[in-house]
Length: 93
Image (cartoon, rainbow, N blue to C red; front, side, top):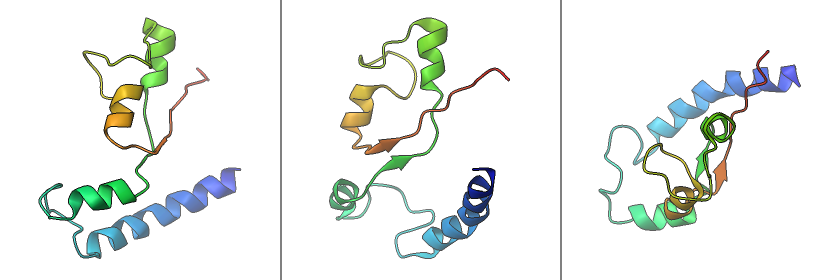
């Protein structure tokens, strides 16, 4: 398990740099190109880290209702077209 995490960490930077080098990568603003909405709909949108689950245990946060504050709840994920969300969990160790 630990070895696979190390492989992912080592691969992250080269993959990120490759994505920046692709046409449309880098510093262009999202939504500026004519195909931006189509690309977003067709892509698998993956968010690799979110601390929202800690709010559920600490504050009684309802993930299923749109919140006034914060960045992630199920209505926002659906509206934003997020296909995969990884939630962080702390074990307190």
